[in-house]
Length: 355
Image 1 (cartoon, rainbow, N blue to C red):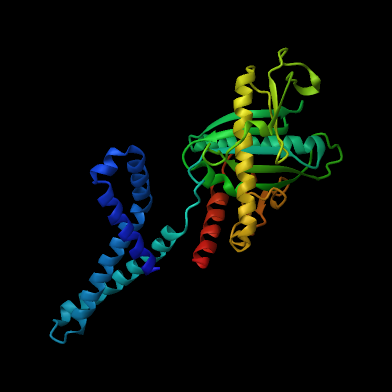
Image 2 (image 1 turned 90 degrees about the horizontal axis):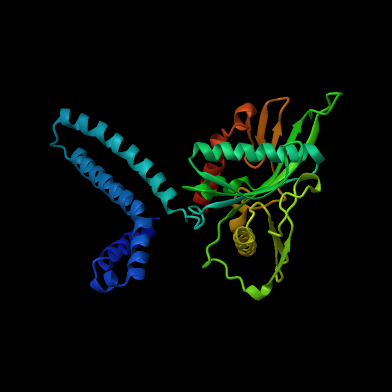
């Protein structure tokens, strides 16, 4: 670990030198690259400097205690200080390990949230709507912006499918472990006998792709235009503004009809397509690095049952880390911080073990 820290420190010093080089300053692109790289490792360098200072103080204190001429009263104070310094050193070592964990390059990106009703008919659609409301409330708490890209609502207030773009600080880093199958157990409002039904919805969390991340050749696209419709087939837009884009090589299909403008629908659909292609590429890379994949808590796997929401027991259980909370009423109002923190801590612990 310390060899890596020395390498990072040397890199930081080199970047500081480059940022004062007239040639780099005159090259805006190179200057921005160096500045970004320096910013990314500055926390590590600062923390390592703090660690080295504590280590120096420990060495000086131990040397003082080893000297038989040291005054007894002063020796007692030095012993107390030494214990405090050693405790601080241990804490700094753990913090440095966390800082050295390779950062997910997508963590700072905006995110597409896709929720689809699974098994369970109308009840599954209602649950999909409940999940979307839960994430929307969580986004509001974090001052994130939620923009619906595409939706297929049901008469009862649920969704067969809803896709939204969530923009703000650290969106993907906070939501990336939400992908998977979410199962609900509750008594539907239409159930006269009071039987508990089980249904499910699928959540996918995709980082917004930049043009540099994914290249799409226009000749690989088939674009269909149709008239948007609402629940029950009722026409909600008499113009042909809805867009369906098919990416022929991958077979991915994206539809968007929420805007009245054909151009706006096409732009939104292209953004979703880029995100799905990025997810596909990332999944293929993860499959090649299967050992790395094992250290993750289910990122991106839509077929994995990750969580159960039991309404009669007011219980939420995340099956990946064995977390059970008996406050489902609060969770459904957007209080999912505790679950997200636990998943993040678990993932970091796995990565630290690998490190």
